[in-house]
Every structure is written in C-alpha cells, then in structure tokens.
Length: 329
Ligand SMILES: Cc1cc2nc3c(=O)[nH]c(=O)nc-3n(C[C@H](O)[C@H](O)[C@H](O)COP(=O)(O)OP(=O)(O)OC[C@H]3O[C@@H](n4cnc5c(N)ncnc54)[C@H](O)[C@@H]3O)c2cc1C
Ligand code: SF4
Image (cartoon, rainbow, N blue to C red; front, top):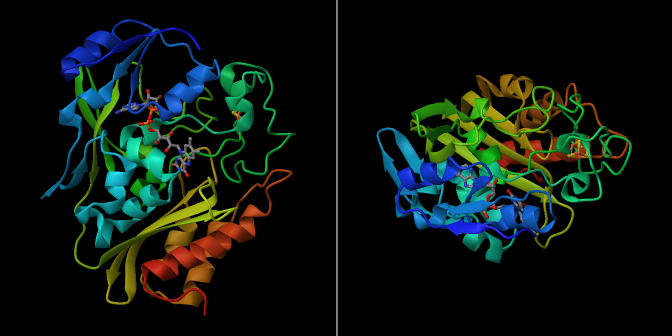
C-alpha cells in the first residue's frame, strides 16, 4: 500500500480545493477504497475524508420528498423512521448489505460509488480489460456470480450496490456537485454500461461528488419492497436481489418500477415485467408472469444460467411481498 496524505476538509470548498490536485480521491468510510489500495489497485496521493463534513449528514422529508446526505450510514438508513412504509425498499436494502460492523461505518455515497467485486478485477494478478488489459478473464473463466444482462460490452461485472438497486426502484435523483456548481440527475442516468465506457461505473468526473440523494414524494397508495437472495444465511453478497416500487390504486397497480441487482453491470430495470403489472390486480400468478417477462433476453454465461430461475423466484416473491401477498403458499 502506498503512503498517502489524509485531508480533513471543513467545507465543500476545501474538498474541491483538495480535488484540484491530481491523485486525490474522496473517501467515505474507506471500506471499499482501502481494500482497493491494499490490493495495490489504486495509489491515491491524498484521501479527502468526506465524513468530517457534518453538512453532508442529514435525512429529512419535505415537499420535494426524502432527501439524504451521502454521509448517512447504511445502519442509519436501515432503521430510519422516514424510511418505513412507502420507502422501505431502501431501508431493507441497507439492512441486508454486508455485516453490522460494515453497515455501522459504510456511507450511502460510498455504497453507490463502490467499485466492482469481480474477483479478477480485485486481484492485482489479473490485468483485465477494466484495468486496461486485453482480456476479460471472467468471460471464459469463473463467472458464476457475473452478469446475465448487459454483458456484451467486454466486461461482465454485476453492479455491487444494494442501495442503488432500491433507489432506482424508488425513482431517486442524485445531486452532483463540482467547483462549477450543482446538477441533479435521475439515478437512471448515473450508471454506465461497459459497452459505453469499460473504465468507469458511473458518470462522475474526477472533481464531482454526490452531495444529496432525493426520493421523490410518493402519493398515497405507493408501496415498495427489496428482497435479497444469498447463497448462505450469514452475511453474503447477493446472487440475486430485486427492488420494486409500485403505485397502487386499491389492489390495482397503476405503475411499477422493477430493478434487478447482481444481474448486470448496472442496476437493471425490466420494463417488460413492469408492463405486465401495469393496470392489473396484483396476484401471485401475475407476479409469476412478470418474473417470466423479466428474464426475456437474458444472456447467461457458461456458469451462471442458474440465476434465471433464481431471479424468477426472487422477482415473484418481491412483488408479492410488496403487495402483502404470501408468495410461499
Ligand atoms: C464483506 C463485505 C460484504 C459486503 N456486502 C455488501 C452487500 O451485500 N451489498 C452492498 O451493497 N455492499 C456490500 N459491501 C460493500 C460495502 O457496503 C461498501 O464497501 C461500502 O458501502 C462503501 O462505503 P464507504 O463509505 O466505506 O465508501 P468508501 O470506501 O470510502 O468509498 C467508496 C468509493 O466511493 C467514492 N465516494 C465515497 N463517497 C462519495 C461521494 N459522496 N461522492 C462521490 N464519490 C464518493 C470513493 O471515492 C470511493 O471510490 C460489502 C463489503 C464487504 C467488505
Ligand atoms: S468482468 Fe470486467 S472486471 Fe471482471 S475480469 Fe472481466 S473485464 Fe475484468
């Protein structure tokens, strides 16, 4: 691990002054960043400790919706009063991620911007395409946890962030700040597929940071749910995770967003499944039909076709649980 300077900013202005120097990176709690440094995958000259900025630690609700600062931890998200009921998918996703110790420290900003978990990417020994090399070792190698959608861009990672999956289902917006000012974008436009740019997972430029995440206000009848399927009961990454956000009119679904995590290099919306639910009464049978539709066009790799039936089950369960239907009968 390289030696580095550790900067504690007192304002956003300080952050951007520090970021002016090449080789500077922002740090939330450093869980992902320090992993990358210890493996020798990145060698920043300076880390800017964003968590020293109290202004980036907030969670409040007003007419614009629920707005969350990037320094809020996963543990805080998992139990926050404002994330019960309608917006529970985010609390459930945060609660299901990693371990209690990690959730106590991990920040929302860091969770959204963490790097891929592909084991070839994480090992210094494999100079794969995402690191500027010539080959994707997962394509013909150990790809059981890799993508079944969006895997035609030379890199077959799955996006690792549970909160991203939930926030996309909730239709969230991100405030991005740089020395030039602020812009707000839909989370739908934040993540980048390898086919577009294999070297990045999101649109952030070197001098840009996330300064707020907003979940738009939900009218009455809005419901959401997140469900994670792991290989083992103890803490684990998902083999499949699903988040849904549905605007209900009584028992009829007026509109839905269904997002798959651990399925593609970005959180993956499934419009064909959403269309199955639209203007229909939610039943177990309808949820199964949506799950079938969701898997249309999947392109599994040599070792991960098992994900298709797993996703079908998880999508069915998530829709049913959101609608208060027992999926196991
Ligand atoms: C054993 C283990 C199991 C895990 N399981 C899961 C899981 O199941 N689901 C899941 O989602 N995650 C999981 N994680 C990942 C973990 O949740 C993330 O590493 C953590 O959320 C990162 O948060 P952090 O604050 O430490 O980020 P950091 O490590 O500090 O930062 C991560 C990245 O985000 C950037 N960054 C941080 N804040 C901002 C900001 N405001 N704006 C722009 N960029 C920013 C940093 O520059 C860095 O590139 C697991 C991790 C471990 C070690
Ligand atoms: S999936 Fe992506 S990160 Fe993993 S080996 Fe292939 S190119 Fe590298």
